[in-house]
Length: 136
Image 1 (cartoon, rainbow, N blue to C red):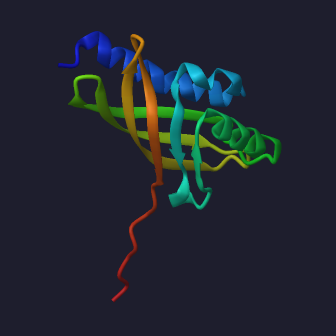
Image 2 (image 1 turned 90 degrees about the horizontal axis):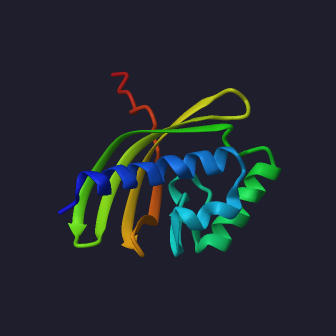
């Protein structure tokens, strides 16, 4: 059963990733992701990246091209135990973009307990879009 300290550490892992991305501390991704983690931004049209090296390279390219968000905010974190050392985490994210725009996403993460630390093994990012309206 997930303990309160487990839940706190999982929440902090998500928050630490946001700070690392915002501060361009990409070399620290190994502190929040498993080495073979999957980072899926396919629903945003940006592809899927496997492993920390691929994630770091993609984040660096986005930053160099001026497309990386200026600031990430993670909120509404819901953690569900899925095994003795695994959990699924659903949260919402807000990102302030370089042009001042605000983007909303839903993060669907799988986290695992490895060597006493909760790490992200998989992240799927889904953009939040306004529902289509029927003008009939």
